Image 1 (cartoon, protein in one colour):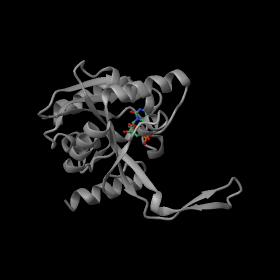
Image 2 (tube, rainbow, N blue to C red):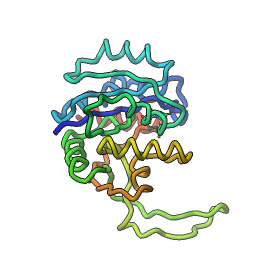
Image 3 (cartoon, rainbow, N blue to C red):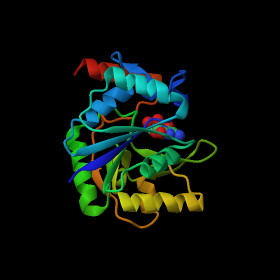
Image 4 (cartoon, rainbow, N blue to C red):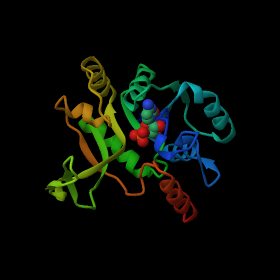
Length: 228
Ligand code: C5P
């Protein structure tokens, strides 16, 4: 069984405070996006890649792929939308008609292990939905508007959602269509299945698979790359 991968790279990356969005920023001299694509193509379960980019970055993206992109799987570039959820929906619409399993991954997570991606694909094939996540290491508080703690949430039940999030294509397409029709906007795809009462199984991820968001994250990524 193989899966198609959607890599979302159409964000503006405003928290990074740089002109270029984060997938295009260099880490160890190579754009973040290229690191991510290389990590994904380590897996033999990956059939195709659909790369979702902002229309104004398509040319830059194609230049980078020409320069760095020797990937063993077919790669299509499509345009994203205003919100991450729009970008994913547009990526889903671009999948081939025979696609059965799709893994959705943030371009801003370059440290994805092949083994975790494979487990998420295998889990989605069995259960319909698979979410890569890690247990919360810190205690998490709910805080009110005045900056006062409202409650402490038992940590044993808390997991931090990462990507890939992997699904049966029919299920995630239906979940996105319903969300669009009802005007629901969420920050990850698994939440769209959850609201339909569908099963989403946890696949334990790794803390290395963090999302590069701030300038400090970029420095951590550089250090991790140097350390191998
Ligand atoms: O903004 P955030 O860090 O949540 O973005 C996660 C991933 O989603 C990034 O790789 C970003 O490029 C992508 N994204 C997108 N389209 C958007 C917003 C975010 O493809 N409109």
